[in-house]
Length: 163
Image: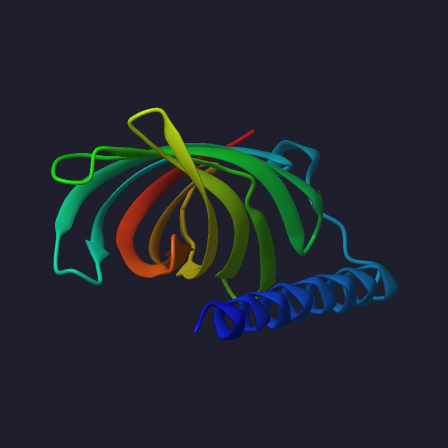
């Protein structure tokens, strides 16, 4: 089972990397540009983390993303899942923007609980609704985390502030 999960993670990560490369090349070939003020984004989020054991935890997150092309960004994320999980997640999300508001996320991370850490890998999908007249967005998100031979689901909403 562990070997199969490792292969699935590798295939998913490779797929997102290829998608990122193709999307970036397409945007550059089409002569598309993005605004300088849109390169940086701070996001604050709330969500529910659901474990395969049936536990649910209210979760809060904060992240910073740097958009290095029209179709991709990289950032840092910190997330805390409250009781009963009481865990921190620290990660480096790579986000792909395939178009029309959609956002795909791949993130290597560490889950920290009681001074013990485990590697975590997250794949997610979201949709950014731009708030008209501002550099802000509201994004529902669905993420799947693989950590310590378990699968967790994170469903939430984030508010983004671009600058």
